[in-house]
Length: 402
Image (tube, rainbow, N blue to C red; front, side):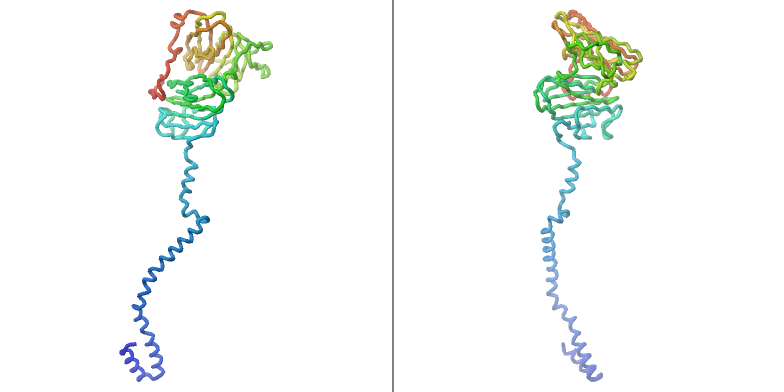
């Protein structure tokens, strides 16, 4: 308490009396506390420093409870969610890694990448695989590992609208990037075990279709020399009369309700050679549509003498002919006309297979062969009978149909 304050208090004592003096004295004695506020300024740094230790302590505690409160620091969590929707880079054995491109050159943006079971069987008609892919000028690639049971020659069949290539263990089995629809076929010898199969597809314009499958050659339906009892079947046999083989000199004929030879045949019968049918505006059966159907004829025939043989096929619409697995005539699209092909045959039995596709309008097929000289044979050949190999894939042809 300073002297000025004491002097004031004495004057109050003289005026108000002793009781009031005591009260005022006590009040005055408490008044200097605010004056001492500067003295307490030294704790102020302590208050400024005190937030630091609590902050460190607060950080240390959550660190100790990281196992139960991991969400604040678990930044990988959203990455895990994203990875579940990420595009796969490989698929299990027995599936294709499927890649769809928004260009027809097997490049550009991979709009869709997914895993897909075999065999390939897609018919997008006038559409496309995804809304992010154009209906024309797109492409796709399927790559996968598959288990082949048993050594042997495997036959690969592909129906594509438009271009297709099939590669097995880096060996081109089918290579046809042509801008048209049709059946393609190739074969390769494989050992039992896993092999890589790659399919490349190009859609130029119009409908988009791809169908690829394979079978070991000894498991394909072929005619044998074992005769079947009473091979006199009507065009529409009963289910119990369906043959699985036919005598030498006859075809095992199979008729399908589609143009891709997919699914089970509606009708299977034995037919004599040559293949010769003129259905006009009708079809082989009431169970088969008048348009958009197909037929496969497989038989074993005895060639009496060695030499060059000329094969002729009139078809409305498409036709293909193989002899002992070699393509002799290849024109699955049409239009209606006669095709020619030649091959050299030894004396003895040979396998002949004919595939016919009816797309619209009248339907007819007539296939025969005769022995002739090679010069005459070559003069009869049409460009469609000797398709030129396509260039190194992928080939980006003009979009217009050829």
